[in-house]
Image 1 (cartoon, rainbow, N blue to C red):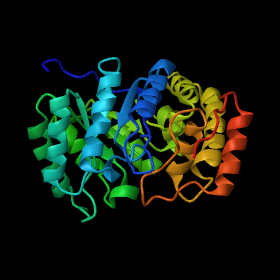
Image 2 (cartoon, helix red, strand yellow):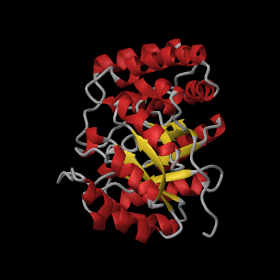
Image 3 (cartoon, helix red, strand yellow):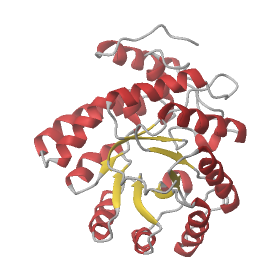
Amino acid sequence: MNRKPERLKGVVIPSITPVNERDEVDQDAFGRVLRRLIAAGVNGIFVGGSAGEGPLLTGPEWRRMVETAHAVVGDQLPLLGGVMDTSTRRVLEKIGILREIGYRYAVLTPTFYQSTPNGSEHLRLFAAAMEAAGDMEIVAYNIPGCTGSVLAVDTVCELARRGWIRCCKDSSGDLPHVMELIRRGKDLGLSVLAGDEKTSGDALLSGANGIIPVCGNYEPETFLSLYNAGANGDHAGVAKQMARVAELRNALVLAGPCWLTGIKYAVSLLGLGSGAIVSPLEPVTDDQRIIIRKFVGAGSQQPAEETR
C-alpha cells in the first residue's frame, strides 16, 4: 500500500454482522448485507464496530468477519475495520491482521473495561497504533457509552495536529461537543463523522463531513438523502429526513431492551440473516417482534419469511 487513503465523508454504514445460534459469523448472509449496502450507493462501510459486535466475537470469528468483508467489498469503496479492545497489545494484534488482509482504515476507541479517562493514556494508545498501522489510516472513535471514557476535543485535535488521524467518528450524542470538534478540527483538516442518529441532522448543518447511522443497515436511502440535504444546507430537507430517522429509531432501536436487536431483526425480515444477536445481549422479545414486523410490513421493503 503506497497511496494515501481517500478522506472519509458522506454516509458510512456501521454494518451489522449476521451470526448463527453459536455466535459464529454467517458469511453468506454477511456478504449479502454488504452487497446490498454497496448497491444502495453508500460512501463507505464500517465493520466490527458496536453495530457489528466486533468486540463480542471470539478471535477466530472476528478474523472471519474482517476477511469476509474485505473479500466482498475490496476497493469498491472505503472499508473500515474496528480494532477496539481492552488493551494496547490486543489492539495492535487486530491492526496487524487488518494490515495482513489489506485494509486501509482501522477504527480505534480508547481501551475499555479498565477505564482510561486521561488524555495521556489515549495519546499513548494512538502512538502505538500509528506505529503498527504503517500505511493504514487510524480513525479515532469517541463512544463513551461503550468505553466509559471520553475522547476530549483537546485530545482529538492534538491527534490531528500530530498527523496521526484525519478523521473522527463521534457517537457521544453530545451535540455541543461535536460542534466544538467540527469548529476546532476544521483548520486541522479533520473530518468529523457523526455517529449519533438523533443529532445527525444538526451535526451535518453544523459542518460534519458525514454520518455513520446504524439504522442505515435497514434503510440506507434515507441517510443518503439526509446527508445530501445537510451538505447543501437544506434545512427543510434535513427536517424531512430526520422525521423518518425518528420513525426508524422508535420502531427499531427503541422498541426493546437492546438497541441493536431490533436492527438485526428488521434486516432479517428482508431475508438477510437470522436476526440472532451475540450473547449475552438481550434477544428480540415477542412484543418487539410485533412492533418491527408491523413497521417492516407497512414500509416499502418486502419482508421475507421469518427464520428463528
